[in-house]
Length: 110
Picture 1 (cartoon, rainbow, N blue to C red):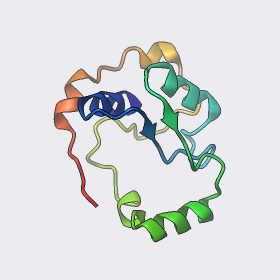
Picture 2: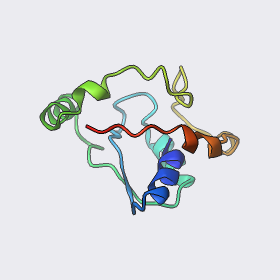
Picture 3: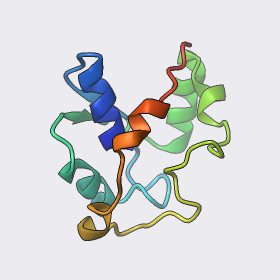
């Protein structure tokens, strides 16, 4: 998903990405996975919530008005796997094709 975000960022002239990643909050957000994600992109990633606990993040989301969208189902995303991987393999990630996904991006305005 970061690769797609990078493609979109280039398209709209952004210099970096900001994510809501939180180390260990969900099974897929392990240190190894974050490293693997960054390996394939050429844009800085800022993770301001990396060390916050769940309650702190929920409070922030509620205060800035993003809680509802953050808890919506991800059924429509074709990239998110049903079962998260906790130790991503860079060789397997290289096989993922994202070039066509940029055309299916929908921008949400809050």
